[in-house]
Length: 288
Image 1: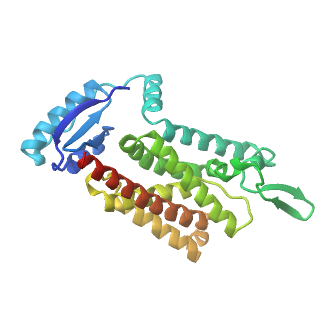
Image 2 (image 1 turned 60 degrees about the horizontal axis):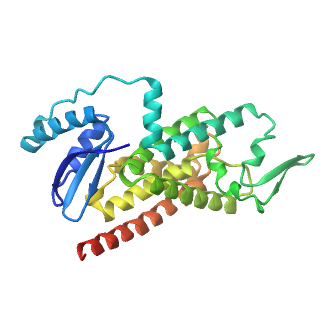
């Protein structure tokens, strides 16, 4: 899909406030920075016209930006096709998670689920007997798609959609895929090392994306992903409550706290590395 340049300004112009306004209006976009210019891009010409008008108001009086009149809603098939084109990783991960939750729900004996868990397991007279993944390398990732209950998958997917679309639109699908897989691998490994049990869910990846966005915003504020810190603070508070046992008392069920912590740590580390690489590449471009 060809993107349309709506705003083209010098690199020192701060577009964060206007970008936040666009997200609030439901306008998907991304901001890219060249050597001496900063560009704001959208993927629809009709939306581009509205964004241009809004920026004209913003440029003169940011307090008087009108509500945008978005084009009429396209058909469902067009919406899905457009999302799949612009957000393939985020959408496919959500679809796989929904499929994983349905598998758990309908596979009462876990005959199929056992091939997607980190540890393969067999039911014996004394309980469950677990076996290491061995050469079944897919098990290092597939637990993130297994969800145990409606609230589990709904809460995770809401946060994953919120975070994923920002990262994928602003930094690209390859970055989103690489980050998600690395975080999923790291959170699964830490949870598996802490406990030999059946576990699953995208929450470790969600914590990782929060950590990534937070560190990236600290180190590259001019390319902020517009992820509110309040979500990170709330999520960390919930993780702490999980570690001290309060979440269990509330009846939410057993929580894979180590996966959450592992995902958060992985996301922060990846954020540091990505920001340093981005700074290095920008420095090289400035000397060309």
